[in-house]
Length: 339
Length: 251
Image 1 (tube, rainbow over the protein chains, first blue to last red):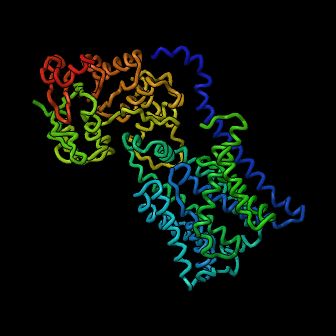
Image 2 (cartoon, rainbow over the protein chains, first blue to last red):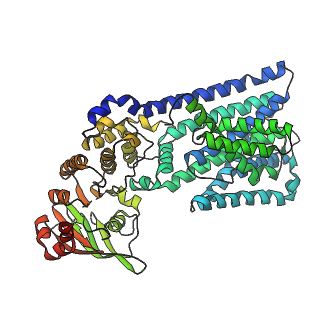
Image 3 (cartoon, chains in turn cyan, red):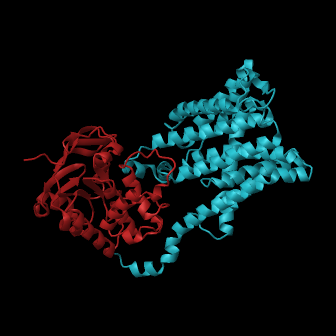
């Protein structure tokens, strides 16, 4: 061994720490997620107690966007693919609900399945083309595909075109209106968020996730040991697209209305902001980012119609002073290095 | 005579008007350590990129284990047992040492489209990774973050990763680059030991290391091999002395 052996052994505690820190950070992020989920779970009774049912509506919206942000984190944070068209998947999922409902198909399982299939297919085709490019070209091409989906829905006058489409009622499950109440829709959304978080957590630690993380760090190295990054990145893109579609299914039910605005590039940008604000590649971060973004949006809107200016200033400060977003800031607060 | 493990015939690569690899031919036999030396700018790195499949050749042929691999990608070449290390260390800093090697084992151990089970707990991958680390004497560093290793240890890990791919032939691109005296002694001893089990193509600047390790040496100057032979033959070759060793002595 090298001459540094003795020193390294005596210094083993801080040196090994990254791994333990990684595990602790892993547990830390699970703990943070558990806290967030618990807080959300007890929100409806509190909202009822203080007589503010709108809180539940707001919280449902937050949970839905948290699911979308979580799915984008797989692409952006783990796959290192800066997709600027992610809102298209949310919109397609929402339209799957509205279009099927307008033809009398109300069952949420059928609608969700249709949304997942549609979004997977859209992700597969657009991803396969987009992944031929890199860097800023990838951003531009995903933006272009997102805008194509947006203008397609704008021009589809049979389903409302620019005006969108109002749902006559929320989706049903085996003919039962289980999502009709705001509180039951909230818990259904929360359940999807928790499952998505657990699923993606397992995925990022799996063989597949390890290749994806390795590719994020050094794609040439991954090829040199025998991995073709394309297939892994495309698969991640499809999984993320399908999950965002599921968020769209919930969004359509929450708003009981869909419109092309869900797919606009501003929406895609907001999803990126949620992920970066919360902390890329942490899963729990983007959930926090979605909460922070939507609360700020709501809160700042009370002060001024130019609330986005305030949000911009806050964002700049966050990016400058808390590398790694909210999750990074919290980690540093507790003195833990990022893994 | 049996077919060489690696046979390179009239390999060429030009960047514009500049012929960087200009009709290179050589054979590497099984369990041989074949060193390629040459002054700066001779085209050594371009040649290794062509051999590893990182860079497409303009013309010529590369045969490996009896198969024409000229048109194959880097990924396909690794799967056939031709692995490379990098001159500029390119380990995955954010992963543990063992994960760096385990990832290379994973690449050849069944599908990586598995989504639920934690990869870092797969015993078989870790065992094989550990064996590769043991061969480069890094097993006691297995659970450290790769980025926290010393430079010499990172160079050892580079080799361990190539080993973990299950390669028959290792293309080592300046494994001693940037190492100090003690670190390079460790690495030379390591390669001495690897020679027993692996065929190695070694590109290296360090003449002492090359003459200590190589069974055969090829000298690359301005994209052409001007001599190939045993270290002794090459050392006394007049053209080599003029083009390369003279320069060393003068320096």
